Structure formats: C-alpha cells, structure tokens
Amino acid sequence: MKSQKDTPATEAAEATAVAVLGWLAGEPELLSRFLALTGVTPSEVRNAVNDPGFLAGIVDFLMSHEPTLMAFCEATGIKPEAVVHAHAVLSGPTEW
Image 1 (tube, rainbow, N blue to C red):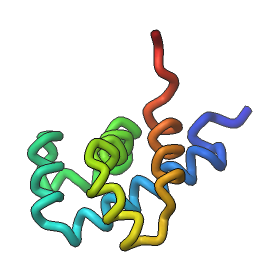
Image 2: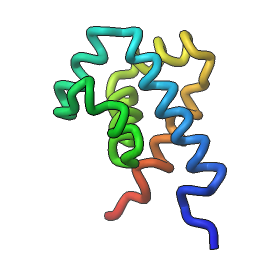
Image 3: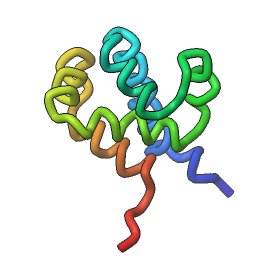
Image 4: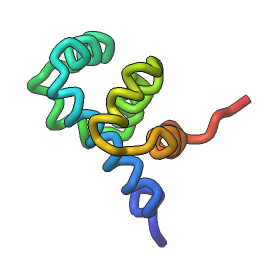
C-alpha cells in the first residue's frame, strides 16, 4: 500500500516547498523573518526540511503575503496555482 507521502501530488507539493525555501535563501530579509516566525535556526533547516509541518509552514509563509507570493512566482516561473495546490496538499484537509 502506498503512503500519502509517496503520491505524485505530495511529491510535487514538497518540491514546490523546497523551491520556496531555495528562493527564500536568496532573500535574506524574508528568510530571517521566516526563521524568526518558525523558531528554526539556520543550522536546523537541513533537518527541518524532512518535517511535513515545516514544509507546510514554508508554503503558508509565502501565501500569507500576496506580493511575496507573486515575486516568488515571477522569479521561479512556478504558477501561483501550484503554490496553492502545494499548500492544500501539505496542510491537509481543513476541519470545520
């Protein structure tokens, strides 16, 4: 049986989150803000990237500010819809 982590949608969402992290690495002010909000130190990022919650947080951070989202999309060529989809996949279903 395939785990949720092994699905193409999850793999694509994780790849998008890693792309966001890579882009943030080139944006020192945004990266500093993200790390401050998460409490993750720069030395912990390498291990944190294996945590689905951390990946979801990366995408959530990007989506929380539309100009930042659009700057990421323009710089990387990744469509905003892909980021929204990654957010939905990584954050899981919303419970009401």
